[in-house]
Image (cartoon, rainbow, N blue to C red):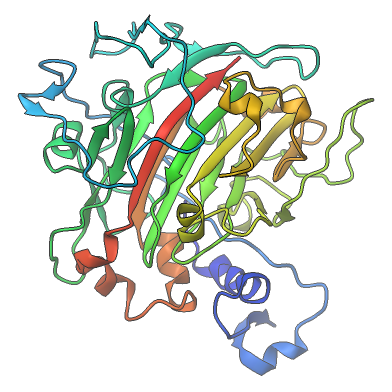
Length: 435
């Protein structure tokens, strides 16, 4: 996420036409940006580009610097109790799952150890890297890691460096996130939020949280059960995977969007050579169909201002306020020898096998997004990836698109007013990793 001034303007035009974000057409003709009727002279073969900003040379795209604190007990941090959410939304999801009972949670790689035993959390995998690329057919999935409730406190790192996407946020450490109520756990539901109480001066940064899993994923199935995501003007939330070495180990954006966007954008970012080829020939008995709207073809971070090769979901309410009002949903990312696929299952359409924690992707409908290994060999471009939840404000993406989003005032003015962030929260029921 990303240097976007140039390509954000193209994206404005795309969103305006396809999704109703703004009323003015913006195009680029003969080296000049043109707004309005003059765009009628734009060539018919011009390409709509989704903008995702490039990183500074001194910082990897989304490098995670952890600053986790040691726990005095599983429910306290430096004698500060984990706060319970008072939000009525932080209740059991209508499609919540109950993992195997009477399992002990532990982590050999974490500095924080927990001896607690719950009736709702299966065991941690103790391997430093989770999973290997499974065969796409004839294989059953085994649950290897399950995150729920306090797991997002104990077993994820808290990023505290400056936002590499130039957002107006101050990412707080684990202890402050708990003491300030920005991370709350109630009934095994985790809320991760942006500060919604502090009045700031225009241009000041607002407290927020960015966490990344201590364990890594290389292949398999990642399933995120989410009741709500941050939404509103200036807000840029994302759930994504990124390699320890970016871009060598790649990036997969499973949930991403900004401001008042209503459809989820799914994107890959890689080294040169990975592309989305809709005409790739699948292996016998396999399908490469997907339902989303393709954006860029090249996933190469060195071209198109690191816009990546995105696919926009065609499902209404797959992102933002509508997603939340519908009761959330389940996002599933499958990474195997066929490539990478992402499904968005909104509340009411979640397959029974997912709620029963026995995923059977072969029975699911076609995915929202799919990148074939035929033109993007996943074993070459993706490895050893951490999962990340974050919420930044303004920055290279939300800030660039703010004027076209129907939001009042300026992005900086919006950030200053805490009342704009009552809905800036993740409500996470669970994240499961299968192999």
